[in-house]
Image (cartoon, rainbow, N blue to C red):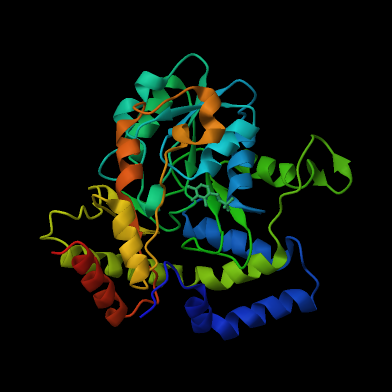
Amino acid sequence: MKIPQADLRAQYHTIKEEVTAAIADVIENTQFVRGPRSKQFEQAFAKYCETGFAVGVANGTDALMLALRAVGIKAGDEVITSAFTFTATGEAVHWVGGKNVFVDIDPENYAIDASKIEAAITERTRAIIPVHLYGHPADMDAILAIAKKYDLKVIEDAAQAHGARYKGKRVGSFGNVASFSFYPGKNLGAYGDAGGIVTNDPKVADAVRMLGDHGSAKKYENDVMGFNSRLDGIQGAVLGVKLNHLDEWNQRRREITTFYSDAFKDIPAIQTPKESSWAESVYHLYVIQVDHRDQVKQKLNEAGIGAAIHYPRPLHLQKCYGFMGLGAGSFPVAERAGERVLSLPNYPEMTEEMLEYVVAAVKKVLSV
Ligand SMILES: *Cc1c(COP(=O)(O)O)cnc(C)c1O
């Protein structure tokens, strides 16, 4: 059997008619950039996230960069974020001229360890970016309390967490603004690059919309230096169709998680993912921890299973962040995770037979 890490073709086949009709409609009406389908999607996504506004942009990295700019982050400002995330989080801070200040992660849920944030605050700190990694929400109440005390902005990086809930409310609705990626492999993915922000602040929504359209709110009137970062019409159409299926897909990811975690529950060699008391995760990834991770991964790959690593190295140990001068030992929880995490296939179209196969292979590789 061959079981990839994700299978976008299998998903496409479940929505083929709807999605091809939506794409054809965009082409027929030549609404290639923004346009009505993108607008409809923005409205539906804002509602889905329980926020007032959504603005589509070109990708999730731009969503973060424009969100940072829209809340006023500028050169020299310090922004606190997690050492263990996809590099885009740190890139966005860097390219708005900000300074990344990393904090270690919570060993249970891989999000920023809120109890370590205050020690990282200086007089130049302006914002916190909690990342809801793997679809699991960060501890927002603790983060918001710190933000309030020190007058900091909060930008949620929700790129992996479309639909996740913190204490019953959708992620994205807690910070001043939240960014999402609609990269094809995300829980809600386009058929190309796409991203967006959600917010309850109309000024932030307007700022992102204007910045992403060459700093222009009115055609050919350019008030500020902007960027070209708009939601493509075809991507808006695809996302509009897929949003209607998201809850059902997320539910299936949760079922798969339960299946795996039940199967592995009496195996001490496997650390299964934990859901914090406040969280309803959407399990963008199903991530276990094991010793000898690289060998385990290789053997699973040889058995036809697309086990993968997200992420092998925390940001402070990546070459491009080397100028920060943070060596090994700076963030022990993140570093240990980098050595031990392993993502097993978890996508909604997996069958019971496939799940059984993965479980059997993992047990065999670990000889348990
Ligand atoms: C995917 C991702 C991004 C960036 O999104 P792109 O659409 O690829 O630019 C940012 N942050 C996290 C945590 C991500 O997983």
